[in-house]
Amino acid sequence: MFDTIIIGKGPSGISAAIYLKRSNKNVLVIGKDNGSLYDGVVIDNYYGFPGGITGTELIERGVKQANELGIDVLHDEVIAIDKYEHFTVTTKKGVYEGKTVLLATGKPRTTLKIKGFQKYRGKGISFCVTCDGFFFRKKKLALIGYNEYMLHELKDMEFLTEDIQIFTNGNALTVDVDYPVVHEQITEITGDEDKATTIVTTNGSYDVEGIFIALGSPGAVEFATRIGAIVENTNIVVDDNFMTNIEGLYAAGDTVGGVLQVAKAAADGMHAAIAIKKQLKK
Amino acid sequence: MFDTIIIGKGPSGISAAIYLKRSNKNVLVIGKDNGSLYDGVVIDNYYGFPGGITGTELIERGVKQANELGIDVLHDEVIAIDKYEHFTVTTKKGVYEGKTVLLATGKPRTTLKIKGFQKYRGKGISFCVTCDGFFFRKKKLALIGYNEYMLHELKDMEFLTEDIQIFTNGNALTVDVDYPVVHEQITEITGDEDKATTIVTTNGSYDVEGIFIALGSPGAVEFATRIGAIVENTNIVVDDNFMTNIEGLYAAGDTVGGVLQVAKAAADGMHAAIAIKKQLKK
Image (cartoon, rainbow over all chains, first blue to last red; front, top):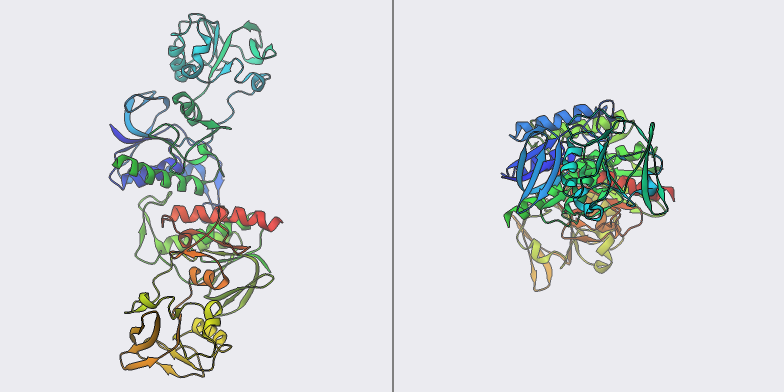
């Protein structure tokens, strides 16, 4: 059982980890990629780096800094976060338990840029089976995805209906599924005035009664939404202590909005760590 | 005329300078020393520095980073800040005009550790001739100080009274004055119930009707107080935009309170710069 599991190995996550570790807290950092600090990005407005520093180099320095303090930074991908008595974080490779969780995965990207997507978002298109599945029981459902994340959503979906079709949207399927799979690229989502009814692909069209998106990797917003945390305009809503409305679930950095800057992300992580430390004391 | 004059060359001041410069603002940084990031201090919780970094090295990197972006960082000491139509910043070596000023000088230290000082602070002991001088007109006044800062206060004091005595408190006098100078160290300040009346030194005691302190260098709090900005518990009070109650006068970093950490100071500087940029647009 970790005191805190931190999702994200960028400035916010690593800063939080450093502050918690130095307060003798048992922390684990799980990071998948460099997020918006990918290769090629040069940051020249973060204090302390004359001439700037590449995103990759900064991330690597942060991980090294954490490692040197004895913090484990796992290069793994989080598939799901659940809360029972404590938090359970499920990754591709394992399952971890934590008293608290900090979401620091950076700013989520738009998940699907296709015609009709924005129109039917929330009107037959959902991002979370656990959250919205209830309204789609016994229906004919489409699940858009191709990897472990999709598989995780699929398992939840099986409780709702047997009529499931997988749409990879042109991506290579990396997991085994027992349902029909449409490999074509999606070109449009159509429907009547208030509800999506059809997925149009490069090769045909498919009638559906509900569409669930589980493409790529879930971001902080997907985790937060699924667990019941309030999200506004793709920003996770937190209080002055960087805690969401879910006790013990924190978020910091780009994922809570504000200016998307390294200095702000690092300071967020620090502030969140100080607040988490206080909560753990209780 | 500068868009912004930044006092302090630490994480907060330099971060603000970088953000302003990158928005094509004409900024000047004036810094005196490394403040709390002096030699020997190692910071190992600031994101991006595996193994930690010394205070001196971090300050030097920051100044280099600013210089490389074309920002002038003057190694000079600010003696006074005044506001007429614009801000006038007076240093040991020059006078500079700015549309806005950012105070980022770090956390001020206690100014005088002698018996009776705390008791009579505000009761006959003042830190600002311009602020409180009115109540001491035609009185017998003591001015505690030894350098340019003291000289600046002295010039204001001459408008009030001719009965002035300088107390160096054991420091070497570095400026010329036309008033009697007491070189002895001060051991105590005594008085009646609600007012200081006597300065006791290692060599005697001196009756006074008012005592003004201008020792060492003025810090952000002294500048802020003198110009009429609200200070609470040695923290300069700022709004969400890091602006004091004085239009155009900003403060950021340790000087506004909160956790005294590099990450917070750097983020403060960034946020202040964004707010200043908006104000300059008006």
